[in-house]
Amino acid sequence: MRGRDAVAALAELIPVAHGVDERIDWSEVEAIWGTPFPSDYVRFMEVYGSGRSTRRSTS
Image (cartoon, rainbow, N blue to C red; front, top):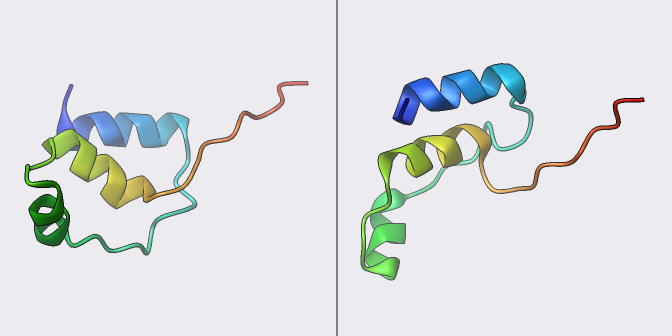
């Protein structure tokens, strides 16, 4: 599973809350880093944005 399908499956397990409105200029990022980023990473960042995941208590 790659790209859009993998991120959609992940969104079913980890709801999207942070990062929804973030915009990333991938052309600029790739120019700075000097390399293209994998499509699944780009898709993940487009959905979840920068941020962090937290561990939820199950008790």
